[in-house]
Image (cartoon, rainbow, N blue to C red):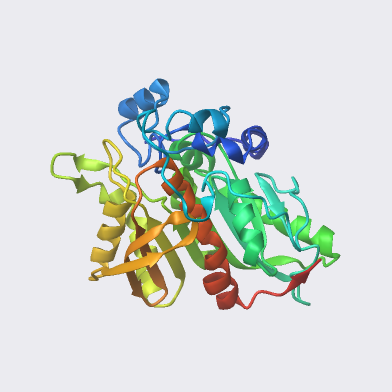
Length: 357
């Protein structure tokens, strides 16, 4: 597939426009990753985009969550809403505020960032950075619950994984983003040597398209952690036999092998959603585990936002968590995993410099 590079200014404008639509519009379509999920033949992908009938939850659209909820959450209008533990709708979680963090800043070339009001940086200027793709506001709500000092950049580029693939197809897009965050942190902290010390890439739903591109680029070697929240799909070479287009996810398999050797960290979650015409996150997770010569173990645990754990796999620093759930809120609920991922895995691994208000 051929991609066309967009300028940083154009990408920023797109991201800002999507951001204005707000987190409550997460219910705008059916759950999983993107209507063009993994790259498909161009004609088929174009048809999906034109139909605008995504098979999965994608970037925010201009419908309110309340209005969409009245449509029965993707099921028959007469079907009762699924009860959630604690009575919290995973796509409309309460806002805990910003804690020790400042409000969103538009200083990065793409997206927005939040940093600790004070601290979060070493004497030599090192700070830890998480770049998250798709759903910057919902992920911020979870991030601030446990983060103690790392910096978060949130990026929303539009509908479908293709928007993220295209947006980061040019290698200089990501390197310029990192440089702009370093400049912003230098300005904020007064430390001219501010630089990214540890780097993680995170995505929910369609955002994995950006991570795929970055991992294939020279800057991908800087990435110490990858987090995929119900977010990794691929196409089929043969839909009847469910044969995966493995070349589309080979970069993730390679990264998983590194994580299994504790050379990196990788956390991958999947729901039980079955999308039409391409591989589910369950299928892709199973394939990645198989490439590591592993086998997932059955599990049973009531998890965050009504998620029910049914299987898991751990090898070195590669972790897979599989859950039940086949509707939009179940897809949104995977965002809720971020708080523990930051607390248990990322900042503990990095020994992130502490921030304070």
